[in-house]
Image (cartoon, rainbow, N blue to C red):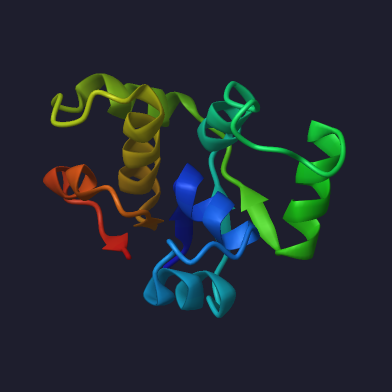
Length: 126
């Protein structure tokens, strides 16, 4: 089953941050199936660039990271947005709600440390 990375899991993996659990790091590094990124996570990073410093322009940076780390974008579809509309409000963050919807629609794991995901029945790696 593929993995869908939450924003912090993505950044912590790329930055080799010790806050990323060993289980999550190993799952991302050694996963035989695609490791996916939601445009919602990239959007979340883009609007908070003051917190993060990129070594090159935004687009160049992500083009490079997608290639170097063999990551794939999971486009947001109408089915994903419809799933968001039907989710109960256990979690209020719109970016995380999109990840939950994408994980449920696509049948993939989420890599993230947010326990609120669990209320939706997604399988979370951490």
